[in-house]
Amino acid sequence: MSGLTTGEAVSLEVSPAKLPSRALAVLLDLAVSVTAYVIVMIVLVLSAGGLDEAAQIALSISAFVLVLVGGPIAVESLSHGRSLGKLACGLRVVRDDGGPIRFRHALVRGAVGVIEILMTFGVVATIASLVSARGRRLGDVFAGTLVVRERVPVGRTGFAPPPPPWLAGRFSGLDLSAVPDGLWLAVRQYLTRLHQLDPQVGSAMAVRLASDLVACTGAPAPQGVPPVAYLAAVVHERQVRETRRSLAGQAGSGAGAAGAPAAPVRAAEGNPGWAPAAGPPVAPPPERQPPGPPADPSGRAATGFAPPV
Image (tube, rainbow, N blue to C red; front, side, top):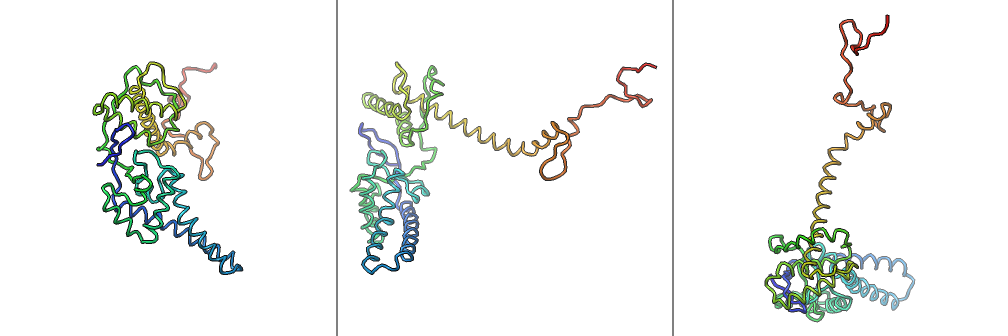
């Protein structure tokens, strides 16, 4: 496993994507782009049949540039490095420092990709990936990017230390929906490698990550809480929420499967004349019927009450 080096000289453990997975992702993206290009060309041919030859050539070139070049650039820029093929293969394009890419990175990768992928049928990109130590093609070299694997086996991740007991549950009302996955990954890897860092570098890294979390959550960090303890408490709160959602989903699916047939029975108990939309009325289960008073040999109900003669 290789790593990325942040501005604080901290190495983040990520795994650069191998050539087979990158090639499969590129093939999937090309299949989608070519399909879209063919559809656009068919529409243009049917709608612009009365134009002259020069106009048709201009439309063809414009469609090629917009669909096969501009489309992948827009997708990578808007998705922060996750095209359809990379999403299927569990890959993502990141900067050299591990941060998300921007439009200029996607533009450089797409522009160079026209030459090394489309015009040379991927030969130049394959050779460059084989020569590079981290599997980067020329577009990644000029853009300062790297394709990494997002799906890392669980056994390779370290153990994040728990927060101090006096901070447990203190951030239960914090909104964590706007925190990106890349920031969670950076915080978790920082906490797992905290004991390996220089104290000064670790403190600076904690301050920066804590400020990033505060900017994403919109709530200031409590006064007197060290940045390291704040990061550990927020990560622990996120793990608690994920565990609750997972358990709630499992309990809901189990209750839905086991309790679905019992709903008509409860409705029938509350309203004896009720019947489902299809099928005969459902009678209450025998075990839930109130037991009647025992009868005596004379046939009268033995209620303990004798009517006057």
